[in-house]
Amino acid sequence: MSENDEIRAASTEPAGERPPPGIDVNVPSVARIYDYLIGGKDNYAADREVARKLIAVAPDLEHDAGSHRAILHRGVRFLVEQGIRQFVDIGSGLPTAQNTHQVAQALAPETHVVYVDNDPIVLAHGRALLAENDRTTVITADLREPASILKNPDVLRLIDFDRPVALMLLGVIHHINDDEDPGGLLRTYLEALPSGSWLFLTHFLHIGPESEQLERVMQGSHKSGRFRERAEIAAYLDGLETVEPGLVYLDLWRPEQPIDEATLSVSQRLVLGAIARKP
Ligand SMILES: C[S@@+](CC[C@H](N)C(=O)[O-])C[C@H]1O[C@@H](n2cnc3c(N)ncnc32)[C@H](O)[C@@H]1O
Image (cartoon, rainbow, N blue to C red):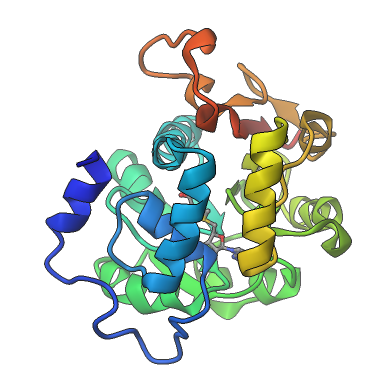
């Protein structure tokens, strides 16, 4: 039994029993597939079927999802240490233990955090969790419609766009297809942020047949999921000051223990991450 299977087995409330209103459990959702991969219980048969197809291509994909959560923790701590007290986490996913607000507010309780996701299940599950404090909120909005986020009254209540902000786009820009202009969207968000703001980005990397096969499964199931070339991902950071170690595999971004790149598995090479400052 894998570590994630044990977490799922220990869940008191198996998914599939009572989906929140308005959620179609028969259509696989990125948020719920990812939830399954990180050991969550807020997923349904259609999501698990896609997750298993992905795992069949990249057997240690669950490890990669874990790397994603781990870089989120290291990156948020880094940003708080840089003095950031406002986070906008777009494509935040279903709430899990140690989310952005818990990590940031453990270090600086006054930090404001807004979670944004276009899947209504995130709000359905996030509400109860976030009721715990008034410095954090979650909204349902689509990254492809910047005004729906930048002008959202709930966002403006917590985020002062005249002061530096950390814009977190973890595992979400690769769900914007090429014809939806991911680079242009990113620029729109960055233009709305003052100097001294930060971009925290992670993105699927094209590495050959494995990533091509994963892309086919994802596009077939939910019509998004692009594994882009390193140069394309690097271009998203143009005009920003990327901090050391640059744009790297997630596990190599300021790891707590030294890691030998040669030991990284295929799944650990499927995503790049970086943190960069707007000058
Ligand atoms: C792979 S999960 C990443 C979760 C989290 N950021 C992390 O790194 O652990 C991607 C999330 O992005 C959301 N998403 C996909 N397309 C989106 C869009 N156009 N606007 C907002 N959220 C989106 C999905 O619903 C999903 O919850």
